[in-house]
Length: 496
Image (cartoon, rainbow, N blue to C red; front, side, top):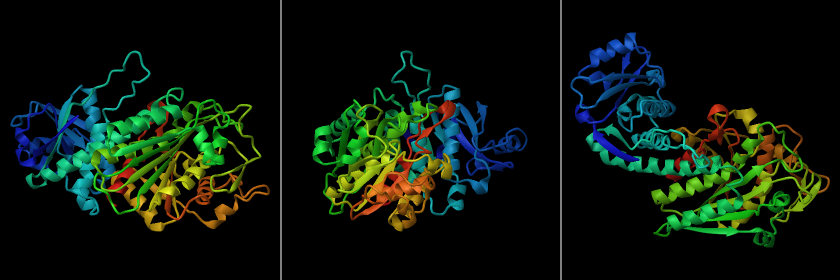
Protein backbone atom coordinates (compact mmCIF):
# COMPACT_ATOMS: atom_id res chain seq x y z
CA UNK A 1 0.00 0.00 0.00
CA UNK A 2 1.20 3.51 -0.82
CA UNK A 3 0.84 6.15 1.89
CA UNK A 4 0.70 9.89 1.27
CA UNK A 5 0.69 13.01 3.46
CA UNK A 6 -1.35 16.12 2.64
CA UNK A 7 -1.31 19.64 4.01
CA UNK A 8 -4.42 20.26 6.11
CA UNK A 9 -4.59 23.78 4.69
CA UNK A 10 -5.21 22.28 1.23
CA UNK A 11 -8.00 19.97 2.32
CA UNK A 12 -10.49 21.26 -0.27
CA UNK A 13 -8.02 20.58 -3.09
CA UNK A 14 -7.31 16.95 -2.22
CA UNK A 15 -8.37 14.71 -5.10
CA UNK A 16 -9.45 11.40 -3.68
CA UNK A 17 -12.42 9.03 -3.98
CA UNK A 18 -13.17 9.50 -0.27
CA UNK A 19 -12.20 12.16 2.28
CA UNK A 20 -12.86 11.05 5.87
CA UNK A 21 -13.78 13.73 8.42
CA UNK A 22 -14.40 13.16 12.11
CA UNK A 23 -17.42 14.33 14.12
CA UNK A 24 -18.41 13.78 17.75
CA UNK A 25 -21.62 12.75 19.46
CA UNK A 26 -24.13 15.29 20.76
CA UNK A 27 -23.87 17.28 17.53
CA UNK A 28 -20.29 18.40 18.10
CA UNK A 29 -18.01 19.30 15.24
CA UNK A 30 -14.50 17.91 14.97
CA UNK A 31 -11.55 20.27 14.43
CA UNK A 32 -11.73 19.85 10.66
CA UNK A 33 -15.49 19.70 10.15
CA UNK A 34 -16.18 23.00 11.92
CA UNK A 35 -14.04 24.96 9.43
CA UNK A 36 -15.33 23.37 6.23
CA UNK A 37 -17.44 25.51 3.86
CA UNK A 38 -20.40 23.16 4.40
CA UNK A 39 -20.00 23.14 8.21
CA UNK A 40 -23.58 24.35 8.68
CA UNK A 41 -24.89 21.42 6.64
CA UNK A 42 -22.71 19.03 8.61
CA UNK A 43 -23.95 20.57 11.85
CA UNK A 44 -27.53 19.94 10.79
CA UNK A 45 -26.70 16.34 9.83
CA UNK A 46 -24.98 15.49 13.10
CA UNK A 47 -27.81 17.04 15.09
CA UNK A 48 -30.71 15.41 13.26
CA UNK A 49 -29.63 12.51 11.03
CA UNK A 50 -26.29 11.09 12.13
CA UNK A 51 -25.76 9.85 15.68
CA UNK A 52 -21.94 10.00 15.41
CA UNK A 53 -21.42 6.87 17.48
CA UNK A 54 -17.88 5.59 17.46
CA UNK A 55 -17.33 3.86 14.13
CA UNK A 56 -20.50 5.11 12.42
CA UNK A 57 -20.18 6.51 8.90
CA UNK A 58 -22.26 8.97 6.85
CA UNK A 59 -21.52 9.58 3.17
CA UNK A 60 -22.02 12.84 1.27
CA UNK A 61 -21.50 12.76 -2.51
CA UNK A 62 -20.39 15.57 -4.84
CA UNK A 63 -20.10 18.19 -2.11
CA UNK A 64 -19.61 21.65 -3.64
CA UNK A 65 -16.14 23.14 -3.06
CA UNK A 66 -14.39 19.79 -2.56
CA UNK A 67 -12.09 18.07 -5.05
CA UNK A 68 -12.87 14.79 -3.24
CA UNK A 69 -15.58 12.66 -4.84
CA UNK A 70 -17.14 11.85 -1.47
CA UNK A 71 -16.90 13.38 1.99
CA UNK A 72 -17.52 10.73 4.62
CA UNK A 73 -18.30 11.69 8.20
CA UNK A 74 -16.83 9.28 10.72
CA UNK A 75 -18.31 9.08 14.20
CA UNK A 76 -15.67 9.46 16.92
CA UNK A 77 -17.97 8.96 19.91
CA UNK A 78 -17.84 11.32 22.89
CA UNK A 79 -15.24 14.07 22.61
CA UNK A 80 -13.97 13.81 26.18
CA UNK A 81 -13.51 10.04 25.80
CA UNK A 82 -11.61 10.14 22.51
CA UNK A 83 -8.47 8.07 23.07
CA UNK A 84 -6.08 5.79 21.19
CA UNK A 85 -8.59 2.96 21.07
CA UNK A 86 -11.21 5.33 19.64
CA UNK A 87 -8.71 6.55 17.04
CA UNK A 88 -8.01 2.98 15.94
CA UNK A 89 -11.72 2.09 15.98
CA UNK A 90 -12.47 5.16 13.86
CA UNK A 91 -9.88 4.07 11.29
CA UNK A 92 -11.36 0.59 11.41
CA UNK A 93 -14.65 2.23 10.40
CA UNK A 94 -12.81 4.00 7.58
CA UNK A 95 -11.39 0.76 6.16
CA UNK A 96 -14.70 -1.07 6.62
CA UNK A 97 -16.46 1.69 4.69
CA UNK A 98 -13.90 1.40 1.91
CA UNK A 99 -14.41 -2.37 1.87
CA UNK A 100 -18.20 -2.02 1.68
CA UNK A 101 -18.08 0.44 -1.23
CA UNK A 102 -15.04 -1.10 -2.98
CA UNK A 103 -13.02 2.09 -2.60
CA UNK A 104 -9.29 1.60 -3.08
CA UNK A 105 -8.03 5.09 -2.20
CA UNK A 106 -8.86 7.53 0.56
CA UNK A 107 -7.61 10.29 2.87
CA UNK A 108 -8.16 10.61 6.62
CA UNK A 109 -8.21 13.90 8.52
CA UNK A 110 -8.56 12.24 11.92
CA UNK A 111 -4.94 12.84 13.00
CA UNK A 112 -5.80 16.55 13.12
CA UNK A 113 -8.28 15.98 15.94
CA UNK A 114 -6.91 17.76 19.02
CA UNK A 115 -9.22 15.99 21.48
CA UNK A 116 -6.94 12.94 21.53
CA UNK A 117 -3.96 14.97 22.71
CA UNK A 118 -5.98 17.10 25.14
CA UNK A 119 -7.49 14.03 26.77
CA UNK A 120 -4.16 12.18 26.93
CA UNK A 121 -1.15 14.45 27.23
CA UNK A 122 1.23 11.47 27.16
CA UNK A 123 0.20 10.63 23.58
CA UNK A 124 2.12 12.29 20.77
CA UNK A 125 1.28 12.84 17.11
CA UNK A 126 3.93 10.24 16.31
CA UNK A 127 2.18 7.66 18.52
CA UNK A 128 -1.20 8.40 16.95
CA UNK A 129 0.15 8.22 13.41
CA UNK A 130 1.83 4.86 14.05
CA UNK A 131 -1.45 3.39 15.33
CA UNK A 132 -3.55 4.82 12.50
CA UNK A 133 -1.14 3.78 9.73
CA UNK A 134 -0.74 0.35 11.29
CA UNK A 135 -4.50 -0.16 11.37
CA UNK A 136 -5.02 0.92 7.78
CA UNK A 137 -2.12 -1.14 6.44
CA UNK A 138 -3.00 -4.44 8.05
CA UNK A 139 -6.67 -4.03 7.12
CA UNK A 140 -5.55 -5.42 3.74
CA UNK A 141 -4.94 -8.82 5.36
CA UNK A 142 -7.11 -11.67 4.17
CA UNK A 143 -6.16 -15.29 4.74
CA UNK A 144 -6.15 -17.07 1.37
CA UNK A 145 -3.37 -19.66 1.60
CA UNK A 146 -5.54 -22.79 1.61
CA UNK A 147 -8.37 -21.65 -0.71
CA UNK A 148 -8.76 -22.80 -4.30
CA UNK A 149 -11.18 -19.96 -4.97
CA UNK A 150 -9.82 -16.80 -3.38
CA UNK A 151 -12.48 -14.96 -1.29
CA UNK A 152 -13.41 -11.48 -2.51
CA UNK A 153 -11.57 -8.73 -0.69
CA UNK A 154 -11.15 -5.04 -1.43
CA UNK A 155 -7.42 -4.27 -1.42
CA UNK A 156 -6.52 -0.70 -0.52
CA UNK A 157 -3.90 0.73 -2.87
CA UNK A 158 -3.37 4.27 -1.64
CA UNK A 159 -4.16 6.02 1.61
CA UNK A 160 -3.32 9.48 2.92
CA UNK A 161 -3.35 11.49 6.13
CA UNK A 162 -3.64 15.24 6.58
CA UNK A 163 -1.42 17.23 8.91
CA UNK A 164 0.08 20.68 9.25
CA UNK A 165 2.99 21.60 6.99
CA UNK A 166 5.48 21.69 9.88
CA UNK A 167 4.54 18.12 10.93
CA UNK A 168 4.83 16.58 7.45
CA UNK A 169 8.21 14.88 8.01
CA UNK A 170 7.22 13.61 11.46
CA UNK A 171 4.04 12.06 10.08
CA UNK A 172 5.84 10.52 7.09
CA UNK A 173 8.41 8.90 9.38
CA UNK A 174 5.70 7.67 11.75
CA UNK A 175 3.72 6.20 8.85
CA UNK A 176 6.81 4.22 7.81
CA UNK A 177 7.14 2.91 11.37
CA UNK A 178 3.45 2.01 11.57
CA UNK A 179 3.66 0.22 8.22
CA UNK A 180 6.69 -1.79 9.42
CA UNK A 181 4.86 -2.82 12.59
CA UNK A 182 1.82 -3.79 10.51
CA UNK A 183 4.05 -5.92 8.26
CA UNK A 184 5.28 -7.69 11.38
CA UNK A 185 1.71 -8.25 12.52
CA UNK A 186 0.75 -9.55 9.07
CA UNK A 187 3.50 -12.17 9.29
CA UNK A 188 2.33 -13.10 12.80
CA UNK A 189 -1.27 -13.41 11.63
CA UNK A 190 -0.36 -15.44 8.57
CA UNK A 191 1.71 -17.93 10.58
CA UNK A 192 -1.02 -18.21 13.20
CA UNK A 193 -3.77 -18.80 10.65
CA UNK A 194 -1.97 -21.55 8.74
CA UNK A 195 -3.18 -25.07 9.59
CA UNK A 196 -0.85 -27.17 11.70
CA UNK A 197 -0.25 -29.71 8.93
CA UNK A 198 1.46 -26.86 7.02
CA UNK A 199 2.86 -24.69 9.81
CA UNK A 200 5.05 -27.32 11.44
CA UNK A 201 8.26 -26.71 13.43
CA UNK A 202 10.18 -27.35 10.19
CA UNK A 203 8.04 -24.75 8.40
CA UNK A 204 8.85 -22.20 11.12
CA UNK A 205 12.53 -23.00 10.74
CA UNK A 206 12.30 -22.37 7.01
CA UNK A 207 10.42 -19.12 7.69
CA UNK A 208 13.34 -18.00 9.88
CA UNK A 209 15.77 -18.76 7.07
CA UNK A 210 13.58 -16.78 4.66
CA UNK A 211 13.69 -13.76 6.99
CA UNK A 212 17.49 -14.02 7.06
CA UNK A 213 17.53 -14.00 3.24
CA UNK A 214 15.21 -10.99 3.12
CA UNK A 215 17.12 -8.86 5.65
CA UNK A 216 20.91 -8.82 5.70
CA UNK A 217 20.92 -7.74 9.37
CA UNK A 218 19.22 -10.99 10.44
CA UNK A 219 21.00 -14.31 10.91
CA UNK A 220 19.02 -17.52 11.45
CA UNK A 221 19.99 -20.73 13.20
CA UNK A 222 17.75 -23.80 13.34
CA UNK A 223 18.68 -26.70 15.62
CA UNK A 224 17.09 -30.15 15.25
CA UNK A 225 16.41 -32.96 17.70
CA UNK A 226 19.99 -34.25 17.98
CA UNK A 227 21.35 -30.77 18.66
CA UNK A 228 18.59 -30.12 21.21
CA UNK A 229 19.52 -33.41 22.87
CA UNK A 230 23.17 -32.33 22.99
CA UNK A 231 22.07 -29.20 24.86
CA UNK A 232 20.39 -31.49 27.41
CA UNK A 233 17.03 -29.77 27.01
CA UNK A 234 15.08 -32.53 28.71
CA UNK A 235 12.03 -30.36 29.42
CA UNK A 236 11.70 -29.27 25.79
CA UNK A 237 12.24 -32.82 24.51
CA UNK A 238 9.64 -34.23 26.89
CA UNK A 239 6.99 -32.26 25.00
CA UNK A 240 8.30 -33.37 21.62
CA UNK A 241 8.53 -37.04 22.66
CA UNK A 242 5.12 -38.07 21.32
CA UNK A 243 5.26 -36.20 18.00
CA UNK A 244 6.45 -37.54 14.66
CA UNK A 245 7.22 -33.98 13.55
CA UNK A 246 10.79 -32.95 14.33
CA UNK A 247 11.17 -30.22 16.98
CA UNK A 248 13.18 -27.08 16.22
CA UNK A 249 15.05 -24.57 18.34
CA UNK A 250 15.11 -21.44 16.23
CA UNK A 251 17.25 -18.34 16.79
CA UNK A 252 16.83 -15.09 14.86
CA UNK A 253 19.59 -12.59 15.57
CA UNK A 254 19.26 -9.00 14.38
CA UNK A 255 22.54 -7.06 14.44
CA UNK A 256 22.47 -3.37 13.48
CA UNK A 257 24.86 -2.09 10.81
CA UNK A 258 26.51 0.10 13.43
CA UNK A 259 27.39 -2.06 16.42
CA UNK A 260 25.92 -1.08 19.78
CA UNK A 261 27.62 -1.39 23.17
CA UNK A 262 24.27 -2.18 24.80
CA UNK A 263 23.39 -5.69 25.84
CA UNK A 264 20.85 -7.40 23.57
CA UNK A 265 17.12 -7.55 24.16
CA UNK A 266 15.78 -11.09 23.76
CA UNK A 267 12.29 -12.33 22.91
CA UNK A 268 11.38 -15.97 23.54
CA UNK A 269 8.31 -17.51 21.90
CA UNK A 270 6.32 -20.63 22.68
CA UNK A 271 5.97 -22.53 19.41
CA UNK A 272 3.60 -25.44 19.96
CA UNK A 273 2.35 -25.80 16.40
CA UNK A 274 -0.44 -28.10 17.55
CA UNK A 275 -1.36 -28.85 21.13
CA UNK A 276 -3.51 -31.95 21.66
CA UNK A 277 -2.60 -31.90 25.35
CA UNK A 278 -0.53 -35.06 24.94
CA UNK A 279 -1.52 -37.96 27.20
CA UNK A 280 -3.51 -35.42 29.27
CA UNK A 281 -5.72 -35.07 26.20
CA UNK A 282 -7.76 -31.91 25.72
CA UNK A 283 -11.51 -31.85 25.31
CA UNK A 284 -12.45 -32.12 21.63
CA UNK A 285 -14.42 -28.87 21.78
CA UNK A 286 -12.36 -26.12 20.16
CA UNK A 287 -9.33 -28.35 19.65
CA UNK A 288 -8.96 -27.01 16.09
CA UNK A 289 -7.93 -23.70 17.67
CA UNK A 290 -4.87 -25.35 19.16
CA UNK A 291 -3.05 -24.53 15.94
CA UNK A 292 -2.88 -21.04 17.48
CA UNK A 293 -0.74 -22.35 20.35
CA UNK A 294 2.32 -21.14 18.44
CA UNK A 295 1.21 -17.49 18.38
CA UNK A 296 3.93 -16.58 20.89
CA UNK A 297 6.49 -17.86 18.39
CA UNK A 298 4.67 -16.07 15.55
CA UNK A 299 4.86 -12.79 17.45
CA UNK A 300 8.64 -13.20 17.80
CA UNK A 301 8.88 -13.57 14.03
CA UNK A 302 6.71 -10.48 13.62
CA UNK A 303 8.85 -8.40 15.97
CA UNK A 304 12.08 -9.38 14.20
CA UNK A 305 10.59 -8.50 10.81
CA UNK A 306 9.40 -5.10 12.06
CA UNK A 307 12.76 -4.43 13.75
CA UNK A 308 14.61 -5.16 10.50
CA UNK A 309 12.29 -2.94 8.45
CA UNK A 310 12.65 -0.03 10.84
CA UNK A 311 16.40 -0.53 11.29
CA UNK A 312 16.95 -0.55 15.06
CA UNK A 313 20.30 0.53 16.45
CA UNK A 314 20.47 -2.29 18.99
CA UNK A 315 20.87 -6.06 18.87
CA UNK A 316 17.54 -7.88 19.09
CA UNK A 317 17.38 -11.67 19.40
CA UNK A 318 14.40 -13.96 18.99
CA UNK A 319 14.37 -17.57 20.20
CA UNK A 320 11.56 -20.00 19.43
CA UNK A 321 11.11 -23.50 20.85
CA UNK A 322 8.87 -25.28 18.34
CA UNK A 323 7.22 -28.70 18.54
CA UNK A 324 3.89 -30.48 18.46
CA UNK A 325 2.41 -31.91 21.67
CA UNK A 326 0.90 -35.26 20.73
CA UNK A 327 -0.15 -38.52 22.42
CA UNK A 328 1.59 -41.73 21.38
CA UNK A 329 3.37 -44.73 22.87
CA UNK A 330 6.48 -42.54 23.00
CA UNK A 331 4.77 -39.58 24.69
CA UNK A 332 5.67 -38.30 28.12
CA UNK A 333 3.27 -39.61 30.79
CA UNK A 334 1.85 -37.90 33.88
CA UNK A 335 4.21 -38.69 36.74
CA UNK A 336 7.34 -38.79 34.57
CA UNK A 337 10.35 -36.84 35.85
CA UNK A 338 12.63 -35.04 33.38
CA UNK A 339 15.83 -33.03 33.75
CA UNK A 340 15.82 -29.53 32.31
CA UNK A 341 18.78 -27.76 30.69
CA UNK A 342 19.34 -25.95 33.99
CA UNK A 343 19.79 -29.29 35.76
CA UNK A 344 16.58 -28.88 37.76
CA UNK A 345 14.28 -31.90 37.67
CA UNK A 346 10.58 -31.53 36.91
CA UNK A 347 7.74 -33.89 37.75
CA UNK A 348 5.25 -33.67 34.91
CA UNK A 349 1.83 -33.98 36.50
CA UNK A 350 -0.05 -32.73 33.45
CA UNK A 351 1.26 -33.06 29.89
CA UNK A 352 -1.13 -30.29 28.81
CA UNK A 353 0.96 -27.83 30.83
CA UNK A 354 3.60 -28.17 28.13
CA UNK A 355 4.36 -24.59 27.11
CA UNK A 356 6.16 -23.85 30.35
CA UNK A 357 8.40 -26.86 29.75
CA UNK A 358 9.54 -25.50 26.37
CA UNK A 359 10.06 -22.07 27.84
CA UNK A 360 11.98 -23.38 30.86
CA UNK A 361 14.76 -24.67 28.63
CA UNK A 362 14.57 -21.71 26.25
CA UNK A 363 14.92 -19.25 29.15
CA UNK A 364 17.98 -21.14 30.35
CA UNK A 365 19.38 -21.23 26.82
CA UNK A 366 19.18 -17.46 26.21
CA UNK A 367 21.48 -16.76 29.14
CA UNK A 368 24.33 -17.42 26.65
CA UNK A 369 23.54 -14.10 24.95
CA UNK A 370 24.23 -12.09 28.14
CA UNK A 371 20.94 -10.20 27.67
CA UNK A 372 19.80 -7.09 29.48
CA UNK A 373 16.14 -8.02 29.18
CA UNK A 374 14.34 -11.25 28.24
CA UNK A 375 10.63 -11.22 27.42
CA UNK A 376 8.81 -14.47 26.75
CA UNK A 377 5.50 -14.54 24.93
CA UNK A 378 3.17 -17.51 25.18
CA UNK A 379 -0.40 -18.70 24.91
CA UNK A 380 0.31 -20.28 28.28
CA UNK A 381 -2.82 -20.64 30.40
CA UNK A 382 -6.60 -20.63 30.13
CA UNK A 383 -6.52 -19.14 33.64
CA UNK A 384 -5.41 -15.79 32.21
CA UNK A 385 -8.66 -15.71 30.21
CA UNK A 386 -10.63 -16.17 33.42
CA UNK A 387 -8.76 -13.20 34.89
CA UNK A 388 -8.56 -10.80 31.94
CA UNK A 389 -10.92 -12.16 29.30
CA UNK A 390 -10.03 -11.39 25.71
CA UNK A 391 -9.14 -7.78 26.46
CA UNK A 392 -5.70 -7.65 28.06
CA UNK A 393 -2.59 -9.79 27.95
CA UNK A 394 -1.13 -10.64 31.37
CA UNK A 395 2.34 -9.36 32.30
CA UNK A 396 4.43 -11.00 35.03
CA UNK A 397 7.92 -9.76 35.79
CA UNK A 398 10.80 -9.86 38.25
CA UNK A 399 11.35 -6.14 37.58
CA UNK A 400 8.66 -3.56 38.34
CA UNK A 401 10.07 -0.97 35.92
CA UNK A 402 10.04 -3.49 33.08
CA UNK A 403 6.46 -4.52 33.85
CA UNK A 404 5.35 -0.88 33.96
CA UNK A 405 7.15 -0.14 30.68
CA UNK A 406 5.35 -3.00 28.95
CA UNK A 407 1.95 -1.97 30.32
CA UNK A 408 2.58 1.66 29.29
CA UNK A 409 3.65 0.52 25.82
CA UNK A 410 0.41 -1.42 25.51
CA UNK A 411 -1.60 1.70 26.32
CA UNK A 412 0.25 3.76 23.70
CA UNK A 413 -0.12 1.05 21.06
CA UNK A 414 -3.74 0.15 21.96
CA UNK A 415 -2.51 -3.40 22.50
CA UNK A 416 -3.19 -3.51 26.19
CA UNK A 417 -1.75 -5.60 29.01
CA UNK A 418 -2.34 -5.86 32.74
CA UNK A 419 0.32 -6.28 35.41
CA UNK A 420 -0.14 -9.50 37.36
CA UNK A 421 1.32 -10.68 40.70
CA UNK A 422 4.40 -12.88 41.05
CA UNK A 423 4.58 -13.59 44.79
CA UNK A 424 6.67 -16.33 46.36
CA UNK A 425 3.51 -18.06 47.55
CA UNK A 426 2.70 -19.05 43.97
CA UNK A 427 6.03 -20.87 43.63
CA UNK A 428 5.24 -22.85 46.78
CA UNK A 429 2.35 -24.49 44.91
CA UNK A 430 4.91 -26.24 42.68
CA UNK A 431 6.49 -28.43 45.35
CA UNK A 432 6.93 -32.11 44.46
CA UNK A 433 7.74 -35.22 46.48
CA UNK A 434 9.71 -36.64 43.55
CA UNK A 435 11.52 -33.75 41.81
CA UNK A 436 12.80 -30.23 42.32
CA UNK A 437 9.40 -28.95 41.22
CA UNK A 438 6.16 -30.00 39.54
CA UNK A 439 4.89 -28.45 36.33
CA UNK A 440 1.48 -27.51 37.78
CA UNK A 441 0.06 -26.38 41.10
CA UNK A 442 -3.14 -27.20 42.91
CA UNK A 443 -5.55 -25.76 40.36
CA UNK A 444 -5.97 -22.15 41.53
CA UNK A 445 -4.21 -18.98 40.31
CA UNK A 446 -3.07 -20.99 37.30
CA UNK A 447 -1.49 -18.15 35.32
CA UNK A 448 0.50 -16.86 38.32
CA UNK A 449 1.67 -20.37 39.23
CA UNK A 450 2.79 -20.91 35.61
CA UNK A 451 4.75 -17.66 35.72
CA UNK A 452 6.31 -18.69 39.03
CA UNK A 453 7.39 -21.94 37.38
CA UNK A 454 9.12 -20.02 34.57
CA UNK A 455 10.90 -17.77 37.06
CA UNK A 456 12.76 -20.82 38.39
CA UNK A 457 14.63 -21.09 35.08
CA UNK A 458 15.67 -17.52 34.32
CA UNK A 459 19.24 -16.25 34.47
CA UNK A 460 20.72 -13.03 35.78
CA UNK A 461 18.63 -10.69 33.68
CA UNK A 462 15.46 -8.63 33.82
CA UNK A 463 12.61 -10.86 32.72
CA UNK A 464 8.96 -10.55 31.83
CA UNK A 465 6.44 -13.17 30.82
CA UNK A 466 3.45 -12.15 28.68
CA UNK A 467 0.54 -14.59 28.70
CA UNK A 468 -1.40 -13.98 25.48
CA UNK A 469 -3.83 -16.92 25.66
CA UNK A 470 -6.82 -14.58 25.68
CA UNK A 471 -5.72 -12.16 22.97
CA UNK A 472 -3.59 -14.07 20.44
CA UNK A 473 -6.55 -14.98 18.24
CA UNK A 474 -10.17 -13.99 17.72
CA UNK A 475 -12.92 -16.50 18.35
CA UNK A 476 -16.30 -17.05 16.71
CA UNK A 477 -17.24 -15.90 13.20
CA UNK A 478 -14.09 -13.77 12.94
CA UNK A 479 -11.79 -16.59 14.01
CA UNK A 480 -8.19 -15.85 13.16
CA UNK A 481 -4.89 -14.68 14.59
CA UNK A 482 -4.94 -11.12 15.94
CA UNK A 483 -1.27 -10.22 15.55
CA UNK A 484 -1.03 -9.32 19.22
CA UNK A 485 1.18 -8.46 21.07
CA UNK A 486 3.53 -7.32 18.25
CA UNK A 487 2.30 -3.72 18.52
CA UNK A 488 2.87 -3.68 22.29
CA UNK A 489 6.38 -5.13 21.95
CA UNK A 490 7.32 -2.68 19.21
CA UNK A 491 6.03 0.27 21.24
CA UNK A 492 8.23 -0.96 24.09
CA UNK A 493 11.27 -1.18 21.79
CA UNK A 494 10.62 2.27 20.33
CA UNK A 495 10.79 3.73 23.83
CA UNK A 496 14.15 2.11 24.69
